[in-house]
Length: 299
Image 1 (cartoon, rainbow, N blue to C red):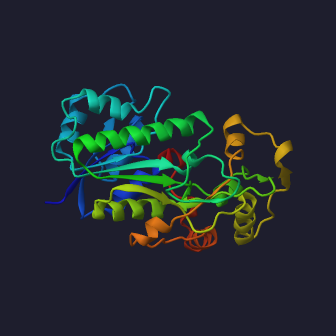
Image 2 (cartoon, one colour):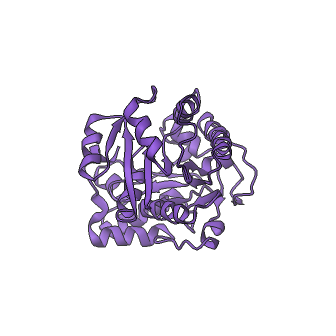
Image 3 (cartoon, rainbow, N blue to C red):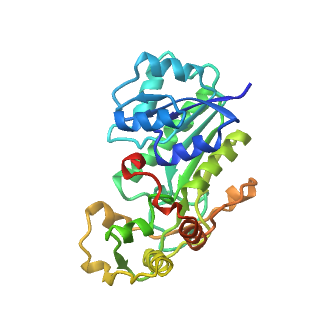
């Protein structure tokens, strides 16, 4: 019997996963917050369910009861994870046929490590409230998985990019900024590698934490410069970090610096399609797929 997958939060990364699993699994449904996005999911063969974090209707509960695999891509709110709250209160706790759970988290749970390398054994010391909530939610999902006796893969993702969400788009729209903070680096991961890692871990029914990230943490300004080179346009001028006009959330990302290691994922047998930003940008530019879909369909 093929896997029956239900997706909580069928957005950018989860849609890429669903597209790659066609023929191997049955996507029994995916949630979205908007009617417009629901129409997009339906066109892609994903049965859409409107869900705004306010409890499940019977149609969602029925689909979840039939699911053998859950993929969770909804960020927790100030009051915790809305999906867990409802699952734990419903008669579907746990879904009777549940065989595996995939939870999309973030490398932000590690906090600041002064530029040092961190793997899955590193101490988590998140600074921001959103990263602390992520870590708490990881722990809550571990408890749920234990009660369900189902393996749980926690995928800690770095900065996500891909078609429609990349430096080319920012340059073309005049939104790219080359902010320079000496010593600052970030990891990133192409959406196809998120989808590929999810499929790989699902097939393995893997249990544990995996950093899903590229091989090369790099200064963010370097990515802008390389994309501008491929486009044959001038990069935007450098802006010193301490003089940059940034939102509090954007500035908070620069308050932490680490290099996320992906050795555990590779040791499990997964091979990155895009191990660094240069290969990914070159492929997207040469193939023309960098524009992606209409922006409204990528929310």
